[in-house]
Length: 273
Image 1 (tube, one colour):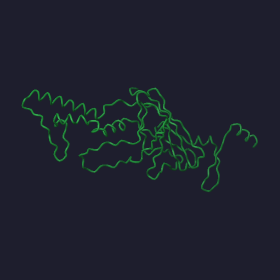
Image 2: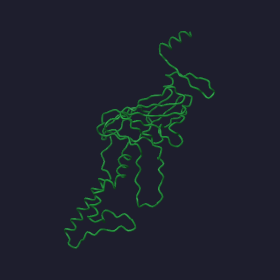
Image 3: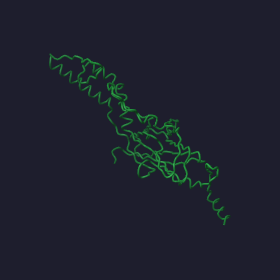
Image 4: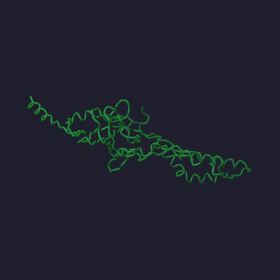
């Protein structure tokens, strides 16, 4: 009987690897069983390996809205000056550094504001475009085995394509420069995944903050998010109809070979439901 089993194992080309437990005894686990024990999927309730995401919508940035409003005010002020000989375009002086609304500024000041509008609203533009309009993605790792995966490290490789953008950091909401109150600390600082541009592909891997150093033990039977803070991703209109593969790898001290999974993002038009 043992010869028959050996023959079947050889014919199926099943391999095994060994795990060292703390008592130094060796436990052999079938390679195929290892793959069945760990599931990797998107962080939604359906445990999907493929999701559908709409392309990023075209938006009017804060700098563009401000520019439009300033031009409207300049036109209004010029018309008012033309209609009345008694009106003068006096500048309003800022007192104690308080902000002067555009409506109260002179034409000359408004025209100067236009020259620096992009720089003035740079942080606002970055926050609204990359933070408010990006998709926030995380990955769930579920260890269905009966042991911890020790010193685990997780990474995703995505081939670079035109129209795909993954920011290397979180753009914070700009603070009012004239707000002298105590600010709320950014709890996401240092938690965002490390994003590496490797030429032909982008690599996303664990943050090394909070003493985790990019590695942690994955308990069994408990779903865990791969990243402390979701990855921000933008998908532009030229990607509509395409499928973007995410090549995932999970490493562990007690895994001889990494566990691999390919997740997929299908990009659709932002007008589709």
